[in-house]
Amino acid sequence: MVLLIYLPLIALPLAVSLGFILLIHRLFPTFRFTRPSPTISTPISVNYHFTRVCNKTCKFCFFTHKTSHKMSSPDAFHGLSLLAAAGMKKINFAGGEPFLYQAFLGEMIQYCKETLHLESVSIVTNGSLVAEKWLAQYGQYVDIIAVSCDSFNQAVNEEIGRGGGDNVKSLFEIAAWCKKYGIKFKLNTVVCRLNYQEDMNAIVSELQPFRWKCFQVLIVKGENDTEKTLRDARQLQISKEQYAEFCKRHEAQSCFVPESNELMARSYLILDEYMRFLDRDGKEPSKPILEIGVQKALAAVYWDQEGFVKRGGVYDWSRNQGTGEAAGGGGNGEHKELEF
Image 1 (cartoon, one colour):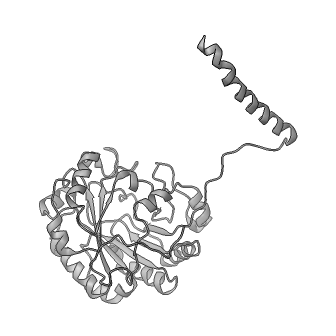
Image 2 (image 1 turned 90 degrees about the vertical axis):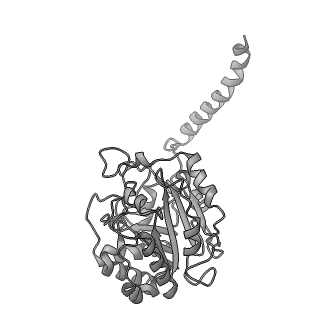
Image 3 (image 1 turned 45 degrees about the horizontal axis):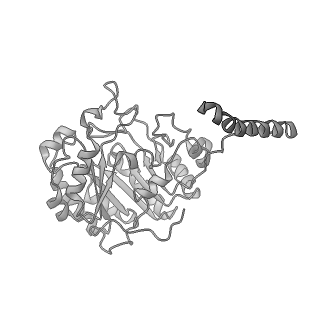
């Protein structure tokens, strides 16, 4: 009985809608109702993973050694210039381990600063191959060096796959070199089953990074999600509550920047070794920007711009911004000059 009463109320709007569509098609036979095209965005900050080769075997790695490909310098220069013309202001060189190719890395960062005049050039490294001699030559072109360290317990680092040296000693050396050469020192930590209960406050306070990024371990389809992929990070996953426990323990650090799976998953623009944008939904990557250009490549993937802003993707990322001391200070400064 109730259904009979409400049926006309439901049917009337549907009939009106269908009538409107039929009228539009009668008046304009070639008109088609389509979904809006994806918004083409400005690639303000790009992570260029120019190599998959690495000298460590981290169990949770999400950019594994599937190929040994690396662009030639002229092709890489061309790709970087296309990105700059499209609006890129910050480039982050990552891998793999970028310092396995120190000459190539030096060429890239020098080109980005001297020719492209980018606001920020950063490097993410495991720290094992960073040398003061390289910094003395190229440090003037680097705004930020981020060193990955997941524990201050060497046994834990060994189990994670970052073994083969004294990680803590290397951190203090690199932090001191960064201060000497005017580079901002950043710390990256992946929070996982092996380290989420660790208290890292004392050594982080001593190191004084300007930012300490703490990522919840992330599963990426085709990279670290099964027993058939080169890495299987499922064994290292933690719950939201366990990640929150780690964050609560360290939230008093002024440099602390937490990044959960929800924020991290699709908020990064990642360019792979072929200069293709990756789509973290498990879809195929874009075609190389050298073949189709930046805008068409961007249109082929999903970039969560809201998530990018929410996770603090824009910050005081130039070496002459922020606290005035490259190696220390808080990491929550805003980049007032940039607008989206």
